[in-house]
Amino acid sequence: MNIKEDDRSGEARLEVNGKVAIITWSRGSKKNAFDSELAFSVGELFRSIQNRFDIAVIMLKGEGSVFCSGWDLSEIDASKGNPKKAVMLVNSGRACLQALDALDQLVISAVNGDVMGFGVSILGHSDIVIQAKNVKIRLPELRHGVVPSSVLGDLVPIVGVSAALRWSVLGEIPDSEAITTGLVTAIVDFEEFDQFIADLLKKLSMLDAEAVLATKRLSKLINGDSAQIARRLGDEASIEALLTTI
Image (cartoon, rainbow, N blue to C red; front, side, top):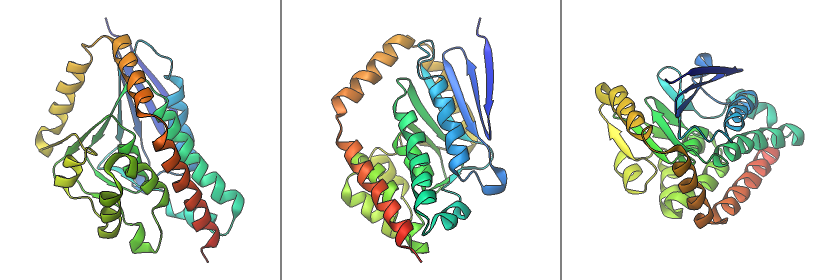
């Protein structure tokens, strides 16, 4: 019999039901934009199940109609020209993503609402991304005179320089390119989305948890450290941009 567990950390919560864990973040007033506090809370939930060998699958989702609208602009504005705050902002986002990378479980992002900025990075660190049709994945940074440095560091190792640059300039990721580059696994009609996710979780929960974890660990070893270099360069550029912005 499955025992359901529930844990809350700030504006994020963790539910465990058998071999499946669901992490949900909720900042309705900010359209699920992350800030340092939320990034810390989500990272803590990742770390709390890192060594749970009984969990095979982790699903990520945003509460409501938006998956993640990027990083909280008020915290970005407060960090401009302030070395301490700029480093804290960038490092808090990276620490959250590093905790996500450290997971040996299969990570699924259930994208039933629009995604921007930092949310795109989360997709890039997921193993499977299921997107509802008509959902938009955007990179609006250049429209605000901001270089999407950290996001580029996350995207380039996955989709290549050409696609990442093109998306940054256009400000939106076309569905067809999201699929062909591997950023998104499947796009499902909105009316069928919840059932599709439920069926997928049921199918994956039938897998042996320890075998899934071992397979994920092997895939990370084969991937090497080239992605880590790209992400470090992107973060360094983000800090520099915050400190040189007037």
